[in-house]
Length: 135
Image (cartoon, helix red, strand yellow):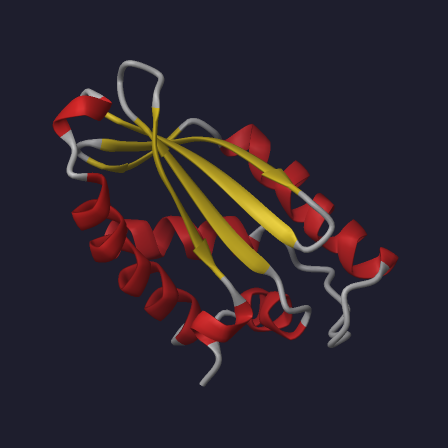
C-alpha cells in the first residue's frame, strides 16, 4: 500500500500549477486535465506486485485512474475488493501533505479508480469524492 500512496503522490506531484478555487469551473477543469496530461507519459507504472496503473483521464471535476490486476475478474470478490480499497484510497488523499493534492482537494476533485482484471473486464470502480476525504 505504501507503493500505492507513493504512486498517487507522484501522479499529483506532476500537477504543480493549480489554482485553489473551491468551485469547479473552466480553470479547475483545465488544471485537472493538465494533471492527467502530465501523468500519461509516466505510464504504465507498477503499483505493487499485482497492480499496474496503465491509464489516466479526466472529466471536468474528476481524475480517472485505470488499473490492471494480474487476476481474472471472475477470481475477485468485487464487494470485498471495493470495500478494502475505498478506505485506503480515501485515507491517502485525506492525509496527504502534498501541496498538489491539497489544491486538488480545494477544487473538490473526485478521484476515480477503475480496476480491470487480466481478462480486460472491469472489476470495480472506486470513487473517492470530496465527502470521502473531507476532514
